[in-house]
Amino acid sequence: MRLLLTATVLVASLAGPVTAEIRPDQVKFRELYKELVETDTTLSAGSCTLAAERMAARLQAAGYKEGDIRLFGVSDHPKEGGLVATLSGTDPKAKAILLLAHIDVVEAKREDWTRDPFVLVEENGYFYGRGSSDDKAQAAIFTDTLVRLKQAGTKLRRPLKLALTCGEETGGAFNGANWLVTEHKDWIDAQFALNEGSVGMRDASGKKLSLGIQAGEKVYQDFRMEASNPGGHSSRPRPDNAIYSLAAALIRIGQYEFPVQFTDTTRAYFTETAKLSGGEAGAAMIRLIANPNDLDASAIVSKDPTYHSMLRTTCVATRLSGGHANNALAQRAEANINCRMFPGDTIDNVLAQLIKAAADPSLTIAPTGEISPTPAPPPLTPLVYGTAKTVAQKHFPGVPMLPAMSTGATDGRFLNAAGIPTYGVPGRFSDPDGNGVHGLNERKSVEGLYEERDYLFELIQAYANSK
Image 1 (cartoon, one colour):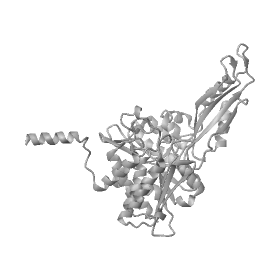
Image 2 (cartoon, helix red, strand yellow):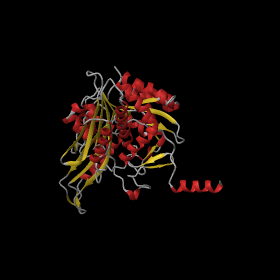
Image 3 (cartoon, one colour):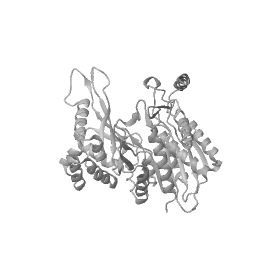
Image 4 (cartoon, one colour):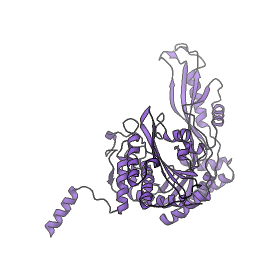
């Protein structure tokens, strides 16, 4: 018996790490998730088109007809295509619910990672791989949801639409979400959309601290500030100098604080966070909600960089260039100023404040690159927020749900600007270190992924059956 047991252990160890026992439906989901993560969708070497085709094949195998699935793309970006699929509803007058997820990922170099970034590895309670969290976990859950509903013959009042798109992670790529709202809004038009952008928090021991639901996000916009000068020989310095003028203006902009603003979402977030935080910070949050011009309260709350960003537009210098020779006075110096604008804050308003802060009329400041839409945040309606809370009480009892505004940017900005209210759906939890998203050794909790899948499966059906 001892020899048999030893042999069994040896065989098991040679077979590789043992994974936790999972339900049969989770086995199928894991296969889909694995295929998606292991399809390289980086801009440099991968193909979103291939990933979309593979997900389309799974939908077809589940019973979706050719007319239910659209693979789309443009000829000058052949590897950056996407997919739109529809599960019909029973009420022809009911607007759809849209499930939006991007399938492109941030670049990942094998030599920098502990594990191959494009091989799904389950280890120590986590799935490792590029995109395992951002955003292929959600893309896999949404695709799997349509597969399960079709196979079960489930009838829902509202149609469900799925959009898997490319271009969210990389500027200059073909952005499928923007193309859809511009060229074929009818394919994805919906009562509202569910998207990434919401993050719940766990502590270092894995305890769930809070759920998040995102309504609104800051808007990405670059501005170029430029100083020019006649220049001359460096042996004969002038009192006016392009580099010094630029540097002085950047210091003034760095010291400028944009005013505090609130949306219904951030007001609710800080109200709840004040209760959880308590102490000086909690009291300062309550004071700031009552009076956004309370500078002392703002200084206390803004000690936390995340809170600081959630309260206002922020702008920061990110790149510098200037001069044309080591022995010549600079004829030109310029800087890129990256702004994350508060929802609804206009480019003209932010530009006016930058000009005021720079306090040098000899400089030119102008928006550059892609001009972002600046939509107001979507409302936290009882249907969206209330339903999410009700379903969460079953799946995550006792965990508070905090409405939040994302300080980053997602493709939701294009949909919100096009009149499709878009929300970062709850269910995802993050470790204190951010789980390596956009960095090295990105990971997703195995247990957390299956819990998120169960929660979203019920929540999506609740939305789709709503009046």
